[in-house]
Image (cartoon, rainbow, N blue to C red; front, side, top):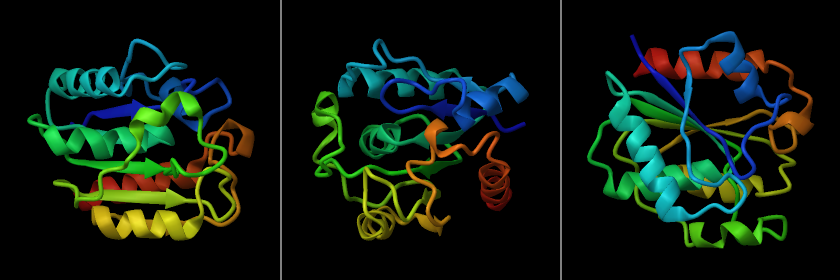
Length: 177
């Protein structure tokens, strides 16, 4: 049975966020646990992700949102534990005016191709990244790209509820792994 590990972005995912809702519906989904959600330290987040992956019984699928997408890019450069793949939702651009200063250590973003399959889900009106930026990242990382139209940052403020469309993307991606 495949394990799924949720990787929320800065600030964690609140009750209205699809990641939190998916976890309520499926208690088998685990969430990685860095020391601080609000003051992200890249080394700590990388170590927390590595611990979560190593704790899995089988290679897991990572489900990252926002800053955690950049975390996956950094982690995969040095990973020794295996993952089946990664769903990356709302990849942010560190050069965006909306990008939090507290996360500056996550830039520059690694550009090399991932060593595992990945899929990016992007919105056309994400305040944290232009679609052209996300398209460039998808090309560099070797990720499939799904454009879901104007859905903001694809978070709790996007009013997606349980985001069944996203769950479908995850299950279709997982089926191809």
